[in-house]
Image (cartoon, rainbow, N blue to C red):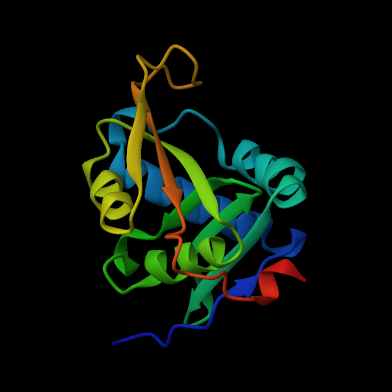
Length: 163
């Protein structure tokens, strides 16, 4: 059965638990050796009190459940996660376009071992600009910083995300 996908929707505090669940399920599926770092309650607290407060957060629903999220702030993508069963359907691409439509350039961090994320970001015009040994992140996992800049010929596309 194929679920209908929603258009991107601006998320609010009422979506904190669902957004935290998307994050945790996607994170644990891609990086199982790092699973269990936080409890579900800690994840929800973090999304409610930090992510949803400090970032613009958008999501896409499949059926009646949240399938993917993006959280961004000026110049940075802080979170981009899609549930494993919904990957490969264009959800991540659609959410990333929301952030790109509102920025001339973006940066983000991902783990060096997350090959799927690396391929995704490189496919969407991001270039690796920094590699670390992981000493600066909570997981102590080697990571890398990506950078994307809007091509000079493209003008920003107005979006509801700026409202």
